[in-house]
Length: 262
Image (cartoon, rainbow, N blue to C red; front, top):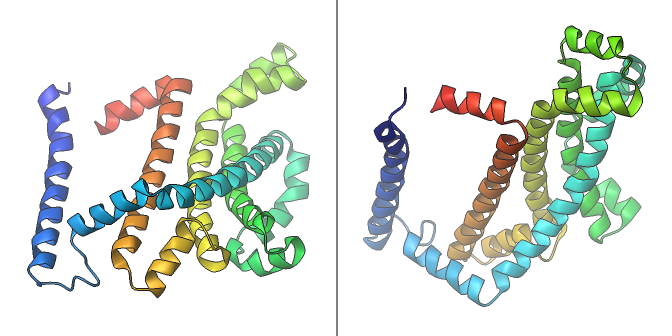
């Protein structure tokens, strides 16, 4: 049985570790042990971050990045979810779609950007489509796997009670595949965030990725680190929200994982 002291120690060790890292970094950079140009002290990075948040510059870029990510995830994730559930449910659908998906999935999604720029133009549409593609495949694969891992006994019970159509979807397929679907959503969001920043690096004037590129071009490394910090926090928050959603929707699974890894 876990004790409260063990729970505190679990958080205390990484906290102390990162505090020590930041203190050493601060004094090393301030004492010219390492170059301030490439490794500015955390205090300077924090000052830059606060300034950019106060003048609204960082918030504007963050809002644009989150909008692109949300649109791409909504389009790609929902499409991948529906197709994945269908392919998991229907053998015919798997046989028809699997060869095409097997050919398209390994393609680096950013390699499609030039083609999408030709088709959709230089505006937001091409960027959102690339992000949607990056979210599509993780959601599809996990949704399909979630349906296929439902045990045979569950299908037999559903057949015994003549569950069909929407009843089968609502009572069997969605609950049975939900853990894998949520795992797919986490992968899709992480992949979408990575591709969003990469697309902004390549073809955007605004957004967190564009800010990174401009900071690198002008050697404003404190702004570069501050932007990387915002991207990292955004990633942590999205994963935390999905973790909370998992605990609400599938509490039995979340409790088991907590007991195992606590």
